[in-house]
Image (cartoon, rainbow, N blue to C red; front, side, top):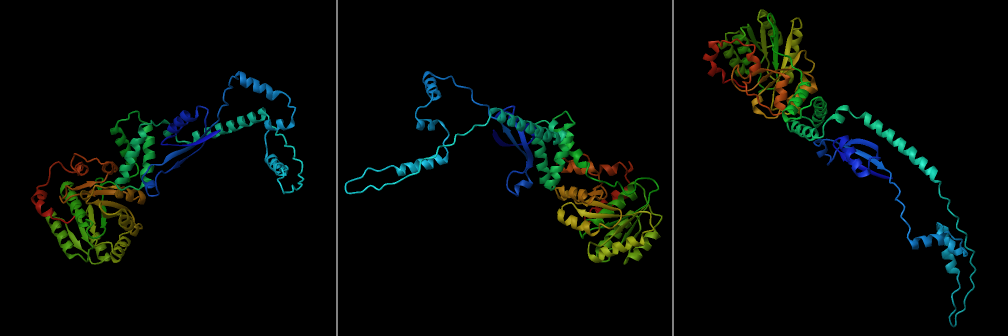
Length: 466
């Protein structure tokens, strides 16, 4: 029996190689996924199947004996007159070799002149025990049992494989591996890329087309399934929302508030009020108040959580109240928690964590961990125009389970703002760029007639710090 290990991307490839090398009667002993390469490269390489198979060699066909061979065979079948000759046709064990050596040592050596030959007595050599070959019927029966067990094991392994892997065409495997490597290059974890690759295999198994465009569409669908979104702040008539923006200094909180206020005040004709809880950055507060004056909306500056809650109640008739905060320091987060406690009676207070798209995933995860206890969390990604890698955005959303609310990219107010969609992030991850304007999803809600007051102050608003 010959046992050999094969490596392949799919079980179909492994079975094909096994049949070519070991024949159609070969049986599979085991199969498992392994990573090739060193410990570091194993994180970036797709695992392959390691399949161990076995095949039984058929006995060689009998060779037609020649005349000389036939004569020798007849001589071997004839009874042997000399007992020593019969020992050559029997299996020789280690006892025979030992006894033969002792007999050679015991044989008298011819004496030379002047040397007396000593007398050495040696024990009689023991008769070699003839070996009894096993019955061919017993051997054949055991081989049949072993072959039956191996076939049952092979069937069990085949049944445990995913149906999608068995029905997936061979040429789809390299394409899936290439797409998964691109996801890792985008910033996804190798484990996430591997999981998405398996989902992609299932999706492709349902499709008959093998065009690259269809591969990318299937990948975008698999990515979008993992992304949660919250929709716009005001989704219908009569809605009232309080949205608090928190994040590190320079993340783009003030810019996001300015863009949202301009969109809902000028384009959707909603009443908007701004409350600033930033007690440190006086220049930012003044800048926000200036933009509020341009838009014609009230802007209040609070020095404490209690005062901010009072301003929120003061503007209870506003459709949208936007609250700006200082940063992510310990005192800043304490103010945010206190404000949430004071606003428990309000119908809905959303907390939007504003994070820069170019921030490392580890830093994003740390920021979210600090405010995970706050209710109605949302993620607002800013500065999408400053990076080409969007894997950290996907990982933060997927790992935390926090829905996405808006994208922000660029300095234009309010053009460079968009309601977050799962399809949009999926397109960014696979490297696609929209040819339509960035904020097309907001345009669907906006009025067809642009208010002249926005365009008259466009240059002033473009100076906002993102």
